[in-house]
Image (cartoon, rainbow, N blue to C red; front, top):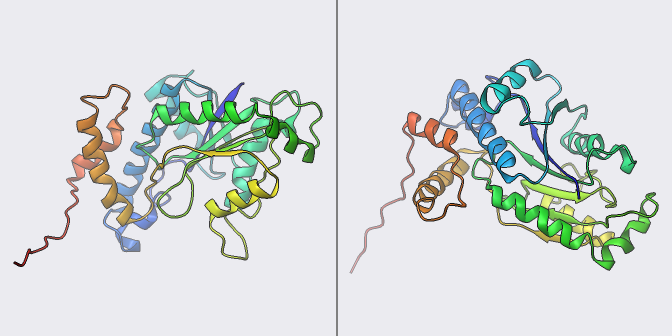
Amino acid sequence: MRNAIVIFTKVPKIGDNKTRLTTERGGILTVEEAKEFYEASLLDVIDSCIAANCGDVYICQNLNGDKDYLNQLIESTFGKEAVKEIFTDEGRSFDQGMQYAVDYIFKDGSGQRLADSVFIMGGDIPSLQPSTIREAVKKLELIASSPQAFTCVKQTEIVNPTIGAGIIESVDQEGGFNLIGYTYSTPFSFNGVFYNSDGVTALDMIAFKAAEHTIPIMLVEMIPDIDLPVDLASFLPVLNTLKIVQQYDSNIMLPKRTIRYLEELGLQTTAPVTKIVD
């Protein structure tokens, strides 16, 4: 199965990235620091996707982002051949943008499609491990070959698919997801996932859509993203733990750029001291 790993991201730019972490929005970072933090995170995510070595890596960037800057950043860090292609999101909402990225890869499921499956993730999950991506690919290959995977394909216009339907996703700490993958024959769209009138969470909506169309679905481990100051505070102990664990587990890939930048900022997480009363 040919896999496309798509990183859905804004181009790093002061005032555009992680604004909810900035002092202007009640956070702790300047707009310049938020941009530098996100850039480090994005590069670490790209690094993990390349290291996973289980599909072509694509980047879907925001419409108004500086593509030349992003190209130069990636080429100077990873070389010209590391990322297959950078393409521009033309959706007007998050739902439409995610769907555009999928449609760009699948080409309506035609023979011209760029891959048989697509895995989409954001640039703000620096603890993402190559092993998690490989696990997602392996699980999707497994469920997409099941009898049920071919039964639900009948709901699509795809005739005689060679690969069945299936969805793989992670969960995050706020009722959402930070990785989702599915095959070209899967009767799924992002319509109403992030924006719906019923207040349904993104994670619930994917599960509801899978159940409605009897699409086989599986999970990989939780991948935390960093949107809010509380996310950043809870992420710092994760980094400290990864640094120690990596000494004993060679499968762990440290998000070295994110670690280095946060260490430069001198940020630390503390827990409230509880006085024990006899």
